[in-house]
Image 1 (cartoon, rainbow, N blue to C red):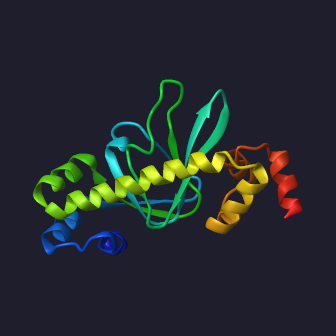
Image 2 (cartoon, rainbow, N blue to C red):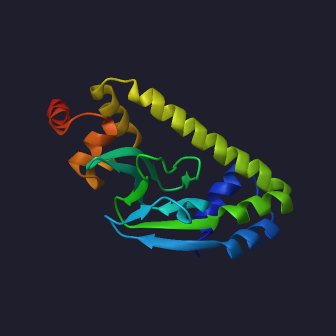
Length: 187
């Protein structure tokens, strides 16, 4: 069942009622991806809230033939339309770093749930708060030195270095590939 991990995460925030469980089961759909797949994040894709059942994904932009890694998310996290967006200069994409199962729900169905289920409001607000917190954390992360950023990532998401290529990691750490290789040798 594609909703079990989603239910576990949501239950840890606020217990789910049976009617809300049924609604979520009926209005969510599994999406499977393999390493290297990309999902262009613009309408209609951007009108879906995704839950990462398993896997590792990153948000990327390609501008002037340069790929920049903007964020990473993994098991048990949500990808909300507010986290990613299309800009005039580039279109954001979701890139899959390993086999991934996303559980998606159309934004309209999530909004409808807010009116139907009182506990849905509390859940939605907690998920939004968590995503805002993660965005603020990313801003603080970028203020660290390259060496400190590397250490933070190796503690928070140690497996990321095994799953991602060097260019993706260097881009995320906001350093050159050469700098990244020097840091790896130091550590």
